[in-house]
Image 1 (spheres, one colour):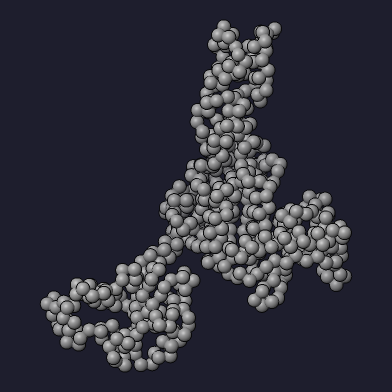
Image 2: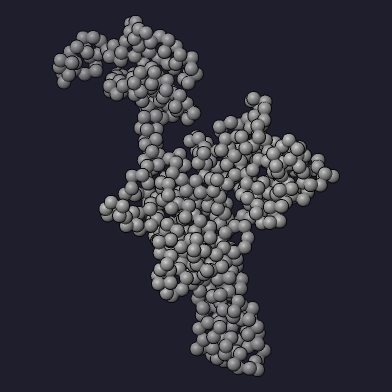
Length: 578
């Protein structure tokens, strides 16, 4: 099943989000406190990962300013929280037809919703009820006369009622009654809905603040498990143990120490390999898992019993540090890899809900995270994530971006009219703060597409563009070689800014060259630029290299008389006179 649309109502800051589309990867963009987390948590409540049932709590989740009017606002029953539309895949259709027979589904779009006080989602599915009945009649091999007994029946429940009322039944009718009683509550709709619920993907919610603890006291963790008080950080450690193929009880068995250490090392190697591929900030890191016995000098609860510590080894500096002392971004990324790797082993049918993923990551690391989303998550899972970082917006297009805005109208001093959180199907918004990340992302893309390319020639100013283009056109007219069109001319404003520009875009693997004016006193700057390694040394060119002068600007490439006459009578000259 594939989620295609959603709508959230009556949940925290969301009175009515409006219906919004869901893609393979959907990005929710909005400023802080806009309601992005509320949207994700409402989605998670439809069918949460982790077992058990989730019930939306009226006191905790219903919009607080309307809580006292709940019964008045919803006289017909519990308030609805979430409504979703799903597209059935061929395997889903086959699962329903295996019970109800062929060609019983009128539409492959189904609707699932959930309200307050509900333990399971309500399913709306369009079935051809007459076709269901005909399939049952054929299976039971009813005669035409027997079929006519049910001409007034519209559903399997109607047929079953008549069969019960009939009492003694012929063999074929007894078989028909038996088949109907195999259905849930003798109903084709209830049966189909049950199949849909069974095949409904789970929603895994993962927050930016979900991070694995680096130091674990097994004694404390077992106590917390017994008391149902295991925190998120320790739960992620338990996920790591599952990934390693071991358990908490196994860790306390000293006879298995070498086996356990080998399993934990294997799991850490698996995660480290992914880190090497998707953590471009530092590829020399690897995870170490160490077992020790707590000593009296250690702080409680690490002063007794078995203690497991995660450390990060840096091969460049040949030293390791406690896991908890690494950057917040690295800890989150490692924790996310652990969680995802484990659930991938256990379950494949998941919708991933990531709340502000990679918030503590550098901009380039966020791009790496997006690449991980595309390469590792998208092929097998739908992904919905929230962000307010321009570097976390999808690279290919904005069609998967949904803006999230807490719509408030200011009517006067401290007088506001709130319409709650709204989700827009497009990337447009009236609130400049909401679209600020999109503006930044677009600005960055425009700068890259207009002013830089795979082959970029850095020049002094915008006038240099005109001179070089004019000279290139004239050379082509004369049958000589002009500037190759693959080169993008990028004005940077001098040798200082050229070096800054080259440094800024050096990570993009561009082929950069520079043609710069030269004046006395710039020798050291030019040499530093050439020696910086940002551009190949031979690719830093000076105008003086082409006009045999100690100092020169771009205009010095042209004959002085031409330039003088051009400034007096520009319309009567062409570059051919240069």
